Length: 619
Image 1 (spheres, helix red, strand yellow):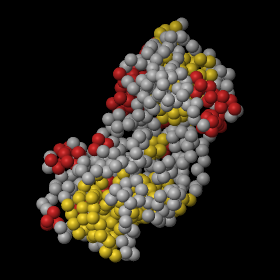
Image 2 (image 1 turned 180 degrees about the horizontal axis):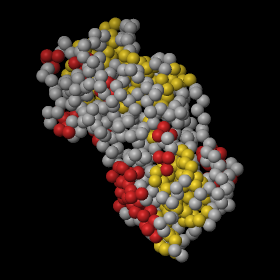
Image 3 (image 1 turned 135 degrees about the vertical axis):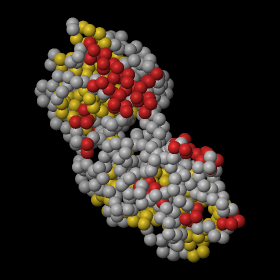
Image 4 (image 1 turned 90 degrees about the horizontal axis):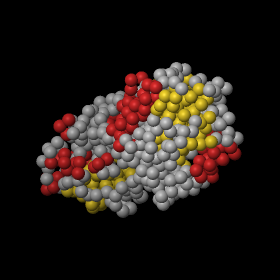
């Protein structure tokens, strides 16, 4: 499923000739047909479509094959080294691919256009390992390769287009196989994932296509072959539910090393024009990927970074921004760029909740937990950019207890403009002490401000604890709760062999949301009309169980749902524009203006991978 998963693994994991655990288990359970052919039977007759078969798992997995013929369609001399080759005589079954990858492990000695005969072992390789839930890639390993001729024409590409890709995304997984689709016969005319799987290893092409995922540091981008599929005015493709996965998305990489051919930089809304052609691969970081032998040209459509309007005198502007592991060792240019965004793009909000503020020496794991130097450097940069002299409040975490980068001690922090808003300091809050709610002069008040919400709750184990603060604007009290819920690490992707994919990380976020919801109810029980703003990197969608738990019993409203569906996003992952960052409001905040300020997620050049959110209202 879509997520903000970090790429902690190497860009290309080492391959093994062994059948993966997930495939082996399926074979042992009889859920995948192994075929009746023996090595002797197939020695001179095996074709690529025989190897690929009509399911995701080869019927010849684990077997030796000999005399497999075809023409080389792509060579990868870096990363996962090997080549693709394709049979020039296709069978009549649209479910069987005519191409396959040959894993050599070293730089291949073949060239595109070579006619080859290959012998080796048929294996199923799971990028990311069996625990990732990823589908497997059928391949030939330990190969013996003979070139029989050179300069042959490459088999004509299959054109992947809006017309060819089905509108339904995937069949449901087989309950008898634990929800896996591995053993199901492919239906490429009915399901998009089956269609792409039926082309695994095949030479394909896409025509001019809109970019829906900007070029990333790994030299890849995402396009859609369905320009009208859940599109928005800025060129993206919006992920609006668990059943609207956006079938037209396809990852694009280049077979040429960047040292020989620089990969183009593209933003969302640009177009990859002309023809992009090459073998269809499957990898850990995005699934089905067109590995381009011929790469189109990027046409810049001039996407601009948004600027929100300035709050009116009587409006309180509250914002949230994940500043992506900010610490003093980051170059001054990052501080300056983030500060400029606060002033120019966010219009200097009155209260700004920050996520991923690291301690004073960043990822150096020496027990340092204070972040005053980080915050001073940032607030100084804001002043230098022409913004207000923000003050800050935060609570230092216990060392290495809040997750994130080891030694970094990320935490939330409040910045506030003292010329517009005041902070009510109530002493006693620390990493382990919970703030509570009391009645004071007939109104709700925090026992500790700033204070942490229920930090001993197991929901926050190895995760950021919510930071609550009490603010006053024009004589009115506003409670602000800054959050950074648990990441989506461990969730299976949209192209998992389990359908629907397992979203294991949701369990923790659900507990976290319930804890925050309970705290908000405590405030509202004391003061029914209290103004409460819950905001931050919620790491989950506006339609998720997490958001439903936050808003349970009407305690909060997800303010982003006030926007048109096509405008609901703060993050772009694998070509899907989606919500991770949110601001939620208590019932007393009836009228407000909400803005998801798109300044990062859609761009190849980013100061953070998140877009900030701004809420303006009159308390």
